[in-house]
Image 1 (cartoon, rainbow over the protein chains, first blue to last red):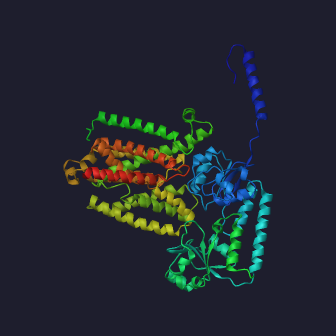
Image 2 (tube, rainbow over the protein chains, first blue to last red; image 1 turned 30 degrees about the horizontal axis):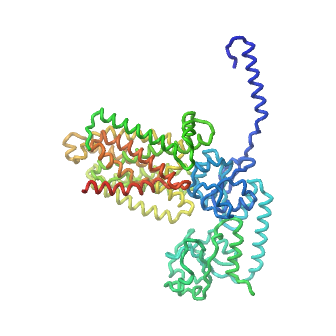
Image 3 (cartoon, rainbow over the protein chains, first blue to last red; image 1 turned 60 degrees about the horizontal axis):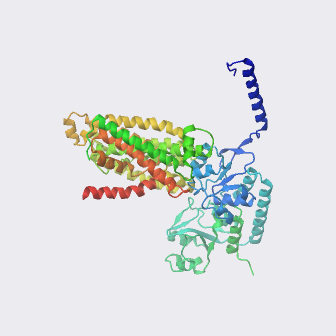
Length: 305
Length: 333
């Protein structure tokens, strides 16, 4: 970088000064945050930052896990649907799970985004990666999978100890529930996703697994797909002992109405009045899942007074 | 209004609309879910780099999306114009011949068998579109050439059939895949990587140029194919050329951003209201007009309910239907 100038000494001097300045600045600049490349739970390779401390959550269950691990302060953004814990609703929102605003996410300057293929599109994850924001994905199709996701996020976010403790607590509660209901006959449960037409859950879904863990048998082990449709004729021979409805805002009929609906009123479970609402947390793969499991176990196997 | 298609007029109209497009682009760059001061936007554009938040938002999120809207809008509008002339039917749009349904089947099929390779989807969609193009051609020709009547029938039947297949495949897909495809089916400009743009843009420009070369012949085709033949037009060749180029434009557009509706149907009509039926003037008007309208629709899609983003196909449908009704009343009354 020799500049042709007046007086070689001055040119060399400024060159030397530049070198010294650069060397000093490099020493003073913070060391580059080292990243490691890991495979996330969806088998994508992710460039994880060493110490992520600005997190964006793209799904409500992930938000719950982040708070449960004590990282609520590090959450800089979540979705419109993140409703628990209550503090999560006042975090800056980035939009819906399925089509969040990339601009809003970028403006929050996160160093890591957390998503799940159950709620988010792969295209969103790819796009965020292209914009320089790593995306770590978790996924679970079973109760055990939820515990594994919590452990995994704990490791990724530097809270492995908290995660192990949380998972141990959840496992202990699960064990207690299983011990209480052990040996009891398992009622056949129909989980109604929608009633007109009748849509229920497939045997290999998350909710089916929770029902099994709570000591029930999800109706229709031969049904195909995630949300199989059943006609009432097909339902009658399956003869569920218990009917479960999700307690969501969009599910408006009261349980009493089913006593009058054709087809439904002939079901033994309806005649016996064994219809129950189940909390929405039954499909949220997060820390409160054990609450849902417990609620379900109490429905399927009422405690003896 | 009919404007004579002198070269001078063609240039003047094109330049005016191009300037309008530039203005629309600049305004759109300043709008979005994150409020950026004008100064920051200007600086980001001028210095073309840097890692400031404004630069990332403007150059890596908004600009690629706007560019995509320009090319897809132009492609669909030119395809619609060309097909309306080819089929001599003002209701024709780029999807009436089943191209978008074919692309959708291709995309869903790619999801079904491979799933995780996002890049495969546009290629599979394009393949689906091209296979449909060949199939409808074979089905719809009569006497060795395209006859608009049989072609429309062949296209509509194929589109219906493919739609049924799409619904069937959707019931078999897992929920997460359905979610992704639903956005694609509604038309979505938000997730195309810039790299794809580098292939798209020249391809679309070439195809539009190809149709423009046939502009005078398109004018004559409107008189009817027999009359056109009498006037010396090689009808079979022109029809095949227009069919292939319009299908290519539609296939490219739909493969990347899904089935954005109403544009290909309405922009030709709006263009005709502005400049008349001469395709030498109508084609550039439609191309630039379609670009402007899609950029505006997309800007609305990403700002109307911010931070939620609407799929752009929803905006063109909600805006397009009233415009269509207005046009209908105006021409009927």
